[in-house]
Image (cartoon, rainbow, N blue to C red; front, side):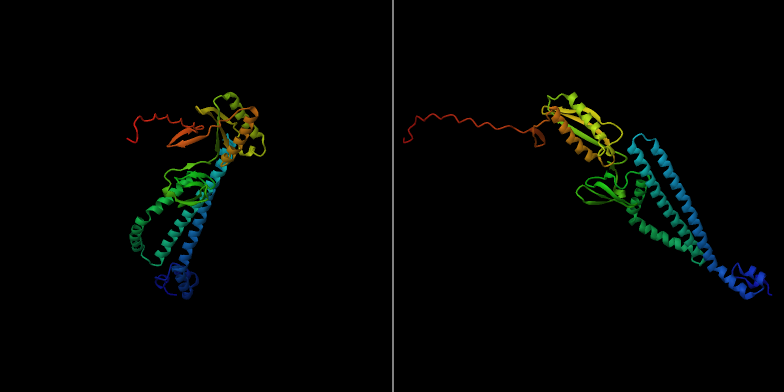
Length: 342
């Protein structure tokens, strides 16, 4: 048998051990060839696959711990809507974050494996990176907005600024219910049914009207002669009655209605205001039902709401005028002393 080192020079790392073990140069040559390219490539792919599985499993466990922590936080929050919404939203946010993190981890592993395979095949990575750098600079100028949108979308998800189903104000006229969120854009539908697609990088400030819980604000205008204390007691009783109604109780929070009393007043009437915390997005239905019940309660108690019709003229709110009196007759003109024939 020839010298294994001399025979296997340039034939792959498996040639020498196979030649020493079998003494067969043909088997050693085939094994060396396989170890030089295909087996090495297969080993790179296997290592990348195992690394990807481990990383994804670790990220998934971190997301599960985040969801468990969210449930624990939700249990100690006082308001039941805040508790339920906190648990659900935090769990959804944890799942979204872990999904994005798993995708990023997979991309990094795939890129690393691809670089190792190209290096094994003899491709110059330095030249490849140099070319990619030039292309990246060229694309970078055109992709600035895309990168901004992706980063903004990531922080929207991580910070839980809003979620699917929330009613948000992303800047007029994009005000409506969120239907879909991606890292690049947000899709929402307004009250008229118009769908708005907003790039996440364009959302400079956002108002969330339904996060965790909502609030119904009911203003009732009564005449200046009304017994305000009686009216406030009726407003509170209406809210307590709604809490006893099986149809409306699920939409109301554990907190009783907050009657603020006199909110404003003018010569035409006195405005009373009451707040009632509700389930997310239920405030509008609660406001309508509350007003209907207040109207019935006030009528039963003999409380009259203001009936003065208001009109707006040149930016000023004026009471509608009553009937206009007939104009006074013009004064009689004394007959002229001059003779018109003269």
